[in-house]
Length: 190
Image 1 (cartoon, one colour):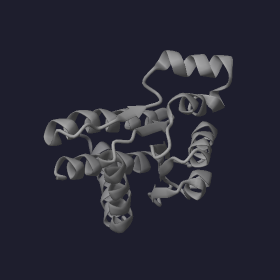
Image 2: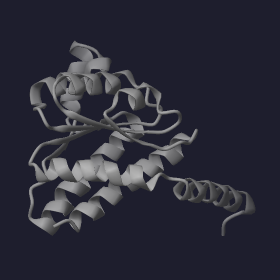
Image 3: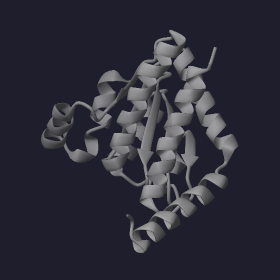
């Protein structure tokens, strides 16, 4: 049985989440999903990255998208993350710098027209910002998922899904929901 304090905290969190969902800019979400769908249908890569909890969101998105979208539509989904090869991440961190773990990987794989999706709750992670700056300079499309005030990432990304919330966990929840919206929409795209 839950005690009253635990129930109260859960209720408060869910109330905040429901309010945040009700205030989302649905047009912004649709525009971002349209972008992902367009890049997918053009056969270009969709490269997702982030730090900490956002790295796990990136992995979750790419896992869902690669498996489910292809199985449902038969159209190849060329998704990848820059965080799933821990050996490569650590080699760049050790041999160059942690702030270059994403940009160095992009130098090897990024092609014009690819989409880089950068996830950062604060929007101020240096390694994420450097990756988006590099992608912008190399004819790639960029989309950021941010919270708080969006940070520098919101300003430099060509496209942005911004969750106006000063709570990292709620921002991360919304980014995860965004990934599920993309999957369901593309699975039903024909």
